[in-house]
Length: 85
Image (tube, rainbow, N blue to C red):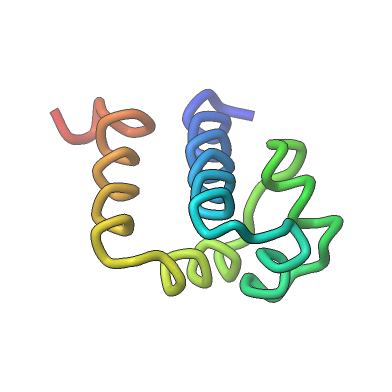
């Protein structure tokens, strides 16, 4: 796995966890919101598996607009910064 893929997974895993904690959601509730199994959610939040495009799209739809902007900024500055310099 390329470093940028690992960084992407880490960034999204961190965002999932932060969002879940801020909203006092269980892992099961987050899995429901993302329309995935609780086991898949656990693996994704722990960084043990990657994310499908569908899961990322669902995450973008449940995040408040300012958090979507923050996530995109983080993608540019932490994951693919060499592409945006």
